[in-house]
Length: 166
Image (cartoon, rainbow, N blue to C red; front, side):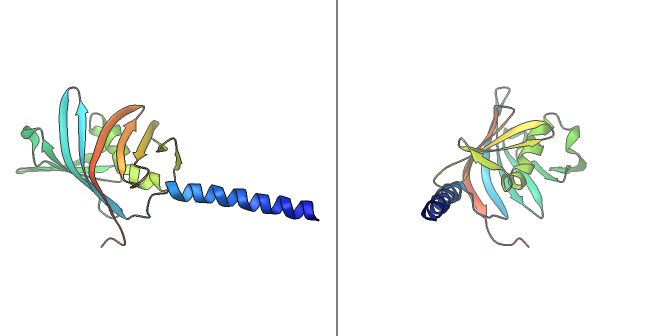
Protein backbone atom coordinates (compact mmCIF):
# COMPACT_ATOMS: atom_id res chain seq x y z
CA UNK A 1 0.00 0.00 0.00
CA UNK A 2 2.84 2.40 0.87
CA UNK A 3 4.52 1.66 -2.47
CA UNK A 4 1.35 2.45 -4.38
CA UNK A 5 0.93 5.66 -2.42
CA UNK A 6 4.59 6.63 -3.05
CA UNK A 7 4.22 5.95 -6.78
CA UNK A 8 1.02 8.02 -6.85
CA UNK A 9 2.68 10.93 -5.04
CA UNK A 10 5.69 10.80 -7.41
CA UNK A 11 3.39 10.88 -10.45
CA UNK A 12 1.54 13.88 -9.02
CA UNK A 13 4.77 15.71 -8.27
CA UNK A 14 6.25 15.04 -11.69
CA UNK A 15 3.09 16.02 -13.55
CA UNK A 16 2.80 19.14 -11.39
CA UNK A 17 6.35 20.15 -12.30
CA UNK A 18 5.59 19.68 -15.98
CA UNK A 19 2.51 21.87 -15.72
CA UNK A 20 4.50 24.62 -14.01
CA UNK A 21 7.15 24.50 -16.75
CA UNK A 22 4.48 24.65 -19.48
CA UNK A 23 2.77 27.61 -17.78
CA UNK A 24 6.06 29.51 -17.68
CA UNK A 25 6.34 29.25 -21.45
CA UNK A 26 2.72 30.03 -22.27
CA UNK A 27 1.79 33.27 -23.93
CA UNK A 28 -1.18 35.25 -22.61
CA UNK A 29 -4.66 34.46 -23.93
CA UNK A 30 -4.84 37.35 -26.39
CA UNK A 31 -7.35 38.60 -28.95
CA UNK A 32 -4.76 40.30 -31.14
CA UNK A 33 -1.48 42.20 -31.25
CA UNK A 34 0.11 45.43 -32.49
CA UNK A 35 3.74 45.72 -33.50
CA UNK A 36 6.33 47.25 -35.79
CA UNK A 37 8.00 44.72 -38.08
CA UNK A 38 11.26 44.77 -39.99
CA UNK A 39 11.83 42.60 -43.03
CA UNK A 40 15.03 42.34 -45.06
CA UNK A 41 14.51 40.65 -48.38
CA UNK A 42 16.78 40.69 -51.45
CA UNK A 43 18.83 43.50 -49.85
CA UNK A 44 15.72 45.67 -49.42
CA UNK A 45 14.69 46.70 -45.92
CA UNK A 46 10.96 46.91 -45.40
CA UNK A 47 9.44 48.29 -42.24
CA UNK A 48 5.76 48.30 -41.37
CA UNK A 49 3.23 48.68 -38.61
CA UNK A 50 1.15 45.53 -38.16
CA UNK A 51 -2.06 44.80 -36.28
CA UNK A 52 -3.90 41.53 -35.92
CA UNK A 53 -7.22 40.74 -34.31
CA UNK A 54 -9.43 37.70 -34.58
CA UNK A 55 -12.29 39.66 -36.19
CA UNK A 56 -10.51 42.01 -38.62
CA UNK A 57 -7.56 39.77 -39.51
CA UNK A 58 -4.09 41.05 -40.34
CA UNK A 59 -3.43 44.69 -41.26
CA UNK A 60 -0.02 45.89 -42.50
CA UNK A 61 0.84 49.55 -43.17
CA UNK A 62 4.19 49.94 -44.91
CA UNK A 63 6.57 52.63 -43.65
CA UNK A 64 9.67 51.82 -45.70
CA UNK A 65 10.80 51.89 -48.52
CA UNK A 66 9.60 55.39 -49.23
CA UNK A 67 8.18 54.37 -52.63
CA UNK A 68 5.39 52.36 -50.94
CA UNK A 69 5.02 54.32 -47.72
CA UNK A 70 1.44 54.25 -46.35
CA UNK A 71 0.39 51.29 -48.52
CA UNK A 72 -2.08 49.25 -46.47
CA UNK A 73 -2.55 45.50 -46.90
CA UNK A 74 -5.37 43.73 -45.06
CA UNK A 75 -5.57 39.91 -45.10
CA UNK A 76 -8.25 37.67 -43.59
CA UNK A 77 -8.98 34.04 -44.40
CA UNK A 78 -6.80 34.07 -47.52
CA UNK A 79 -8.37 37.21 -49.00
CA UNK A 80 -6.35 40.40 -49.21
CA UNK A 81 -7.04 44.03 -50.01
CA UNK A 82 -4.47 46.68 -50.88
CA UNK A 83 -5.13 50.40 -50.44
CA UNK A 84 -2.51 52.79 -51.80
CA UNK A 85 -3.15 56.43 -52.52
CA UNK A 86 -6.22 56.44 -54.83
CA UNK A 87 -5.92 52.75 -55.72
CA UNK A 88 -7.76 49.92 -53.97
CA UNK A 89 -8.21 46.31 -55.02
CA UNK A 90 -8.91 42.87 -53.55
CA UNK A 91 -7.27 39.57 -54.42
CA UNK A 92 -6.31 36.16 -53.07
CA UNK A 93 -3.01 36.08 -51.16
CA UNK A 94 -2.03 33.21 -53.48
CA UNK A 95 -1.58 35.77 -56.27
CA UNK A 96 1.22 37.50 -54.32
CA UNK A 97 4.82 36.53 -54.81
CA UNK A 98 6.10 35.02 -51.57
CA UNK A 99 2.54 34.55 -50.36
CA UNK A 100 3.83 32.14 -47.71
CA UNK A 101 5.00 35.21 -45.78
CA UNK A 102 1.49 36.69 -45.56
CA UNK A 103 -0.09 33.33 -44.78
CA UNK A 104 2.50 32.61 -42.08
CA UNK A 105 2.06 36.03 -40.49
CA UNK A 106 -1.74 35.98 -40.68
CA UNK A 107 -1.94 32.50 -39.23
CA UNK A 108 0.71 32.89 -36.50
CA UNK A 109 -1.77 34.28 -33.98
CA UNK A 110 -4.25 31.48 -34.61
CA UNK A 111 -1.67 28.69 -34.72
CA UNK A 112 0.36 29.78 -31.71
CA UNK A 113 -2.60 29.04 -29.44
CA UNK A 114 -2.54 25.37 -30.46
CA UNK A 115 1.21 24.97 -31.01
CA UNK A 116 3.77 23.45 -28.71
CA UNK A 117 6.57 25.60 -27.31
CA UNK A 118 10.00 23.97 -27.73
CA UNK A 119 13.54 25.30 -28.05
CA UNK A 120 12.46 28.95 -27.70
CA UNK A 121 9.77 28.95 -30.38
CA UNK A 122 6.29 27.79 -31.32
CA UNK A 123 6.25 25.57 -34.39
CA UNK A 124 3.41 25.03 -36.87
CA UNK A 125 2.91 24.20 -40.55
CA UNK A 126 0.96 26.40 -43.00
CA UNK A 127 0.45 25.21 -46.59
CA UNK A 128 3.46 22.93 -46.27
CA UNK A 129 5.69 25.71 -44.90
CA UNK A 130 7.32 25.13 -41.52
CA UNK A 131 6.90 28.24 -39.38
CA UNK A 132 8.74 29.05 -36.16
CA UNK A 133 7.49 31.94 -34.08
CA UNK A 134 10.15 32.91 -31.56
CA UNK A 135 8.92 34.37 -28.27
CA UNK A 136 10.87 36.26 -25.60
CA UNK A 137 10.89 33.96 -22.57
CA UNK A 138 10.47 36.80 -20.06
CA UNK A 139 7.96 39.10 -21.74
CA UNK A 140 6.25 36.44 -23.94
CA UNK A 141 6.34 38.98 -26.79
CA UNK A 142 6.88 37.81 -30.36
CA UNK A 143 10.52 38.29 -31.42
CA UNK A 144 10.83 36.88 -34.93
CA UNK A 145 9.07 34.67 -37.45
CA UNK A 146 10.94 32.24 -39.65
CA UNK A 147 9.46 30.28 -42.54
CA UNK A 148 11.28 27.16 -43.73
CA UNK A 149 14.28 28.12 -41.56
CA UNK A 150 14.60 31.58 -43.14
CA UNK A 151 14.11 34.54 -40.79
CA UNK A 152 11.28 36.44 -42.46
CA UNK A 153 10.64 39.27 -40.03
CA UNK A 154 11.51 40.76 -36.68
CA UNK A 155 8.98 42.25 -34.27
CA UNK A 156 9.63 45.52 -32.40
CA UNK A 157 7.46 47.39 -29.88
CA UNK A 158 5.24 44.34 -29.59
CA UNK A 159 1.98 44.65 -27.63
CA UNK A 160 -0.78 42.11 -27.02
CA UNK A 161 -4.40 43.18 -27.35
CA UNK A 162 -6.28 41.56 -24.48
CA UNK A 163 -9.98 41.08 -23.87
CA UNK A 164 -12.70 40.99 -26.45
CA UNK A 165 -12.50 42.77 -29.78
CA UNK A 166 -15.40 44.86 -30.96
